[in-house]
Length: 457
Image 1 (cartoon, helix red, strand yellow):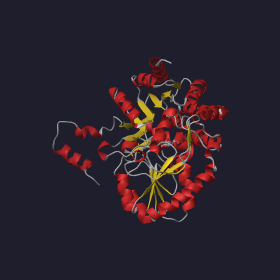
Image 2 (cartoon, one colour):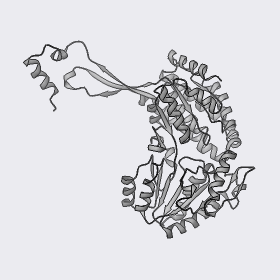
Image 3 (cartoon, helix red, strand yellow):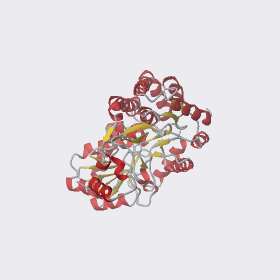
Image 4 (tube, rainbow, N blue to C red):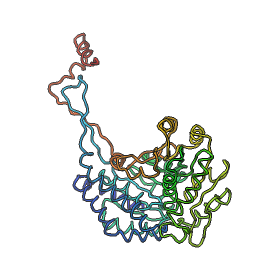
């Protein structure tokens, strides 16, 4: 589909104003929910084909998550869109001031391959709820999901949303067009290209990136449950999750105990042979499989490491890396979990602060003093205590990074605000004209009145 004509159509629809009344926005969100529920099995099959995603995982993290996000927006949208009164200084009285959220126009949403339903449709829900039209660019690395999105978005969401399929050339052509906002989820190299292209048109961007999300285990109590939660978040979607714990730190003796518990947790979650588990996914393509193999081959494996290129199976793997190993230098984005020994919380904090700011930081078993230290001395997109990744399911929490892990945030009201402009409005009647004291020519009486009106109470 031609990028220029697609964007032109979307702009024409927005200019017509048909998608901006609240009733229409709610109808579009309802249609999106129908699309997901009526074609649930089609989406599940596409996700299985693209990523080997288990049905239960697809229902929970892709379809169910997106349905919950849409429902939350539907329930609250009218309230979020109400004008918000703002106090007016005495010098302008009588007058009224308020702000209200207004749509930006036509926006571009570029989705990733790792959660190609959730991370494409969730921001789209916010864009349409805000009254915009949207163009979607799904990832070419999830071709089955991209194809079903192209077909169903046209059927359920036209004319307010359109899909452009393809790879880098199609994305480049889209980015050459003028949009009112670009929302991108993906890696750092592509994000730089998005920012460069958006800068040509002074287009604002939201970048949802990733990075190495650290976890620190401070206490041995409830270690089995801690290990289960870490293993669940790390190996969900075969580790291809931006908020998965990317490495775990603990003091040496505690780390040894945690390693044993993680091995048991992996067996509890995926059985003794994860390759035959119906609950374990696959690596997206051969290039990423080879990259992960290279990381494992250059470090010390203490559990797992088995793989099969033909099926893109990569076992849940625990490693004990050296500081200079490649697995500690880049975001893993796969089922490999480094275990790193540190001498207490101060060293853990220093380690976190030497790298880019993470998308999420996880702290387990920590006393209040340790929690306070991490909260005050680190910077991250999110900070979770005793649970990884689950903050995404809280619709009232903004999801986004900081520094190298991204800019901007979304989910719930934050999605609607991301795709809106908060317009300021002031209404001051012509009579009585209290501004006459500000008009030239000035004299002592006017100056006295102005001083009185502008004096702080």
